[in-house]
Image (cartoon, rainbow, N blue to C red; front, side, top):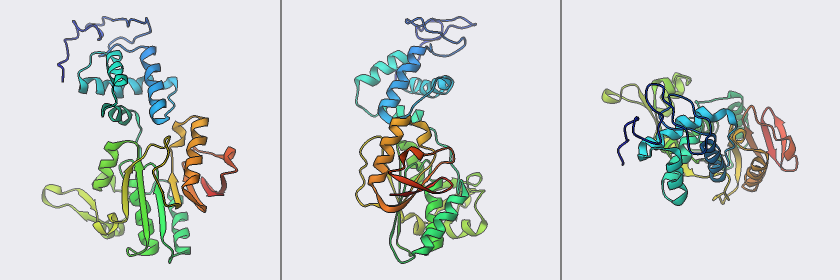
Length: 297
């Protein structure tokens, strides 16, 4: 890693004591930033993350994008966004994944939007003898897929036939999910009964940590999947959770992703989406069956 140059000598940084370095393209730069930041930098990042992950960033995301991508500049030793993006575009290496990881948003908790899990439990209980394939298309750090698995275990029994395939584009959060280890504040929404049945409580140096039990974890599979690419999934799913993902896509990308999801679902399968998502313009693919719950046609 290259060492960072001092702020007073680096052509890519803002100066000290309120000094201001203008970017070559003359775009506006806020005072006091560690790195020069222009509209051109933002627009370039916006185009790249749309190309690679389908994420559509609006102009109100300047501060978020600066904060997250500037971490990559520090990690890689670059002194300007322009240099970093130049190197990124010339390569096809692992930094692309780090770039995507930096710009994905991961907000989750156990049993978030509880009504979805109530509906899932009823659905599973109605056909206890059949094998179930469930896909959680935005696994994040694992709280959602494990909530799905807990619901399935409660409805079908731990020995029931169910598989939960969990995917995310962010490799770092997916690695956390695969470990299945959470701090006390992360499981505070779970009942003591569920904690005792589905988690192991840490002791000694692991005090305050909870780990998903192997009997539950064996039903869960983790895979890196980019929703804007052809899905590497073969066997069709009975249920898909794709919640609070589509809000980051524009209309055409949403339609393409919905078509891909439709192709990997069984007819009559159920799609659960986020509370701010509405797919009324995809009536030929899915029919609304409840609050943010759709049936695959």
